[in-house]
Length: 162
Image (cartoon, rainbow, N blue to C red; front, side, top):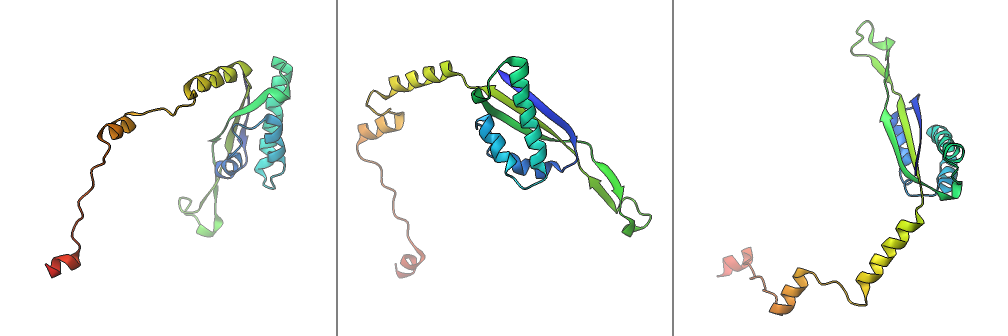
């Protein structure tokens, strides 16, 4: 089950917000929220609000517990930018534009599926059986037993001598 939450038109540059989102995917929702709340940057407030919103959506709308939720994706998109004039460039508006950028933040949480994990571990156990997997390359090497040796090329010093 996927749960989504978003915040749009945030008055922070998307680049600054993206710096905070690295390393959150795959974490438990509680752990991700605690990590985000310790960041000193302005963008951590926005991230914290959206994470709380996503957790509340999961609890109220889908009757899921916080412990089951894992961060599937955190996306930061560009919003519209306000253009302001820099007075130091006089009347030349095209040269003195200051862009006040905005961003859109999307968080997706998903539940941990215990059934899928058990199926994956069963497949891994079947493949192991105590023997390593053989690929085509290892079979070819065992048939030939000797690898071809590359010829030594002449160096400049040997060319001068001979």
